[in-house]
Every structure is written in C-alpha cells, then in structure tokens.
Amino acid sequence: MSKLLLDLRVPDKYDKATMADIIRQLCTQVNRLSEGTLSARYQAQASVPTSVAAAVGDVVWDSNVTVLGTVGSQYVRLGWICNVASQTAPTFQEIRVMTGT
Image (cartoon, rainbow, N blue to C red; front, side, top):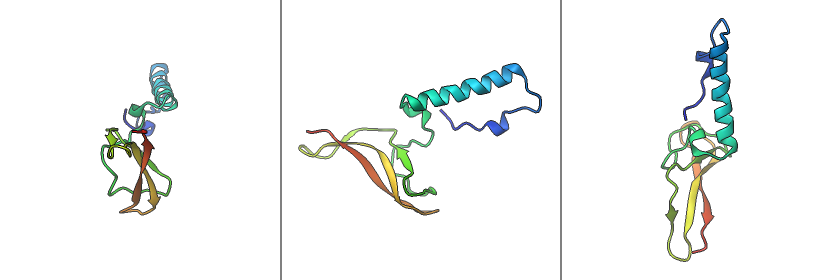
C-alpha cells in the first residue's frame, strides 16, 4: 500500500462519494497497521537503508524476512532501527529475533 497523500485528493466541494472513498482508504490503512500487515508499511524494503534521512528510533521493516545466521545462532531479521541520526547517512542496527536453532 502506498503512503496516503490526501492533500491531493480533498476537493474544494465535498462530494459524498469522494469523502467516503477517502475515509475508506484511511480505515484500510489504520486497520492494516493495527493488524501488523506489512503492506500497510510503505517504507518497508529488502535491504538496510543507506541514504535516507532518519531520526534515532526510526524503524524500517524488512520486506524480505528470512532466517539468517548459522546453526545454533539462527535468527530472523525483522528490519532495522536507526541508532545514529543523519540527514544523509544514518546508521541502522538490525532488529533480530532468535529462532532457537
């Protein structure tokens, strides 16, 4: 799902069908976020972010979650969290969940 940009969608005159469509899209986005659906996270990507502006604590979810590591220390990478803020080259740390194998 793409990021909602409603400033381009709200008309000067409020048509009932247009407003219903806008509200429906908002509800869909909020419901997907509350259910943890990856499609609701427009910033998800398959590799560590390299050239994005980020603040400490910003999270980028992994759109290609796989089991990594070696036997005895395998983990699932869920995404990355920014631990050094920068407008041009922030540093991200992997968010890992150990699998127990």
